[in-house]
Length: 541
Image 1 (tube, rainbow, N blue to C red):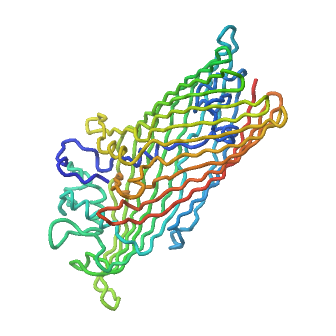
Image 2 (image 1 turned 90 degrees about the horizontal axis):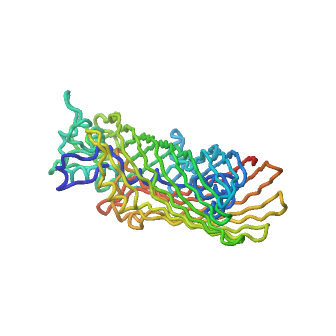
Image 3 (image 1 turned 180 degrees about the horizontal axis):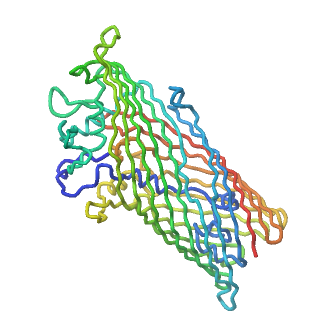
């Protein structure tokens, strides 16, 4: 939703009412531990190691470690469960349950590395291409808040009033569609007004929501997210005197994200606009939002691995932001049922029932994801064991968004970019991996990864008003994430087979809408656990 603007409201060129927000930038820029089975079983701690197809997406210097060519493919089966402290059975007709679960099957990685042996200081010049699924957006959950302390309609009424909008500017006539108005009114304000979720204040200017002193209501949410980020990488690298390994990489990304969200309130003792005026009664409404973002981007990576002695390797890599060109489409609908009730609980007059919907939205924007920097150190113990430690920093506070104006130009979105600075900070990631060669052909592995939250405490604790886009006021902030992994590998001549088990735990907080003016919106703690089984088949020649 659009920010409440005061002096700047008269700007001639403004972002669309259904424009992007810092929340979209954050959601689309998440990274995950994904790759080959060996890579995942060792917690992704490969910045100083290399010699694995996943390094084409991590430290491209890892391609320089190869002495022979390789081709490989990885299959990932990931059952996930989603639990919320506010989730429970509410209405069987909606199919809501706690916990929710989902199983995804994907090809995590497919790649080829070609190794060319050379004479002289440059021992090898290698090149590689790969496809990798670097992120999955799959998530489904529900949350139920009994006796919610405030209503979404109160929030919409508050910011609609603050914008100075009049009822006539939000209503339809034969020759006027407020969704297409050049004044760019907020679409949730329009939808709420036409659905009688907000009504003109009879005692003064502005609007009122459905709740009033004595109102009691429940809030229900159901969210389903789907999608992915795929990356196609082209890398080049080499080996200088078996001491310095270098690499550069170019990545092309393909992004698809879909979000379907239901928010519903059921309230007694509400203020309802029926039978020619405002009365006390029962109010029920559903707000359904459908959003899809698609597009592509590109990035550049450079890295180096230094092996001063055979027992020690030090790695460093830096990734530019991924520069995305994206298109967002969406729409929203409401279904509502309001009835005046007398003191005995009987319906008075005729209930107001109906449905409303927005126009279809369509707009283009550009997003720069966070830049990434990683360092690693690995120790080799004889010919039997490897211990590796990585540190990575992702600069979420440096994400950047541009919107496309009516002339097709891309303009910095100062409001969204300001929100990014207010809500998000750099995240720190630690990865630890170990491998033990039981026999020359058989190895055991283990790993651990921990990612600190990238949300500032002021935003996470509800002390800031959080602005979203379009007609969907809900958002989810992730807390810390950790993974624990184990695996094994077997090699026979040029063939390799690697398997991994990866347990991932992500804690998040879901907010139905932002806290505002001292009111606490419905929210729920969300826990996602994923148990992945990963299998990689490879051949070196």
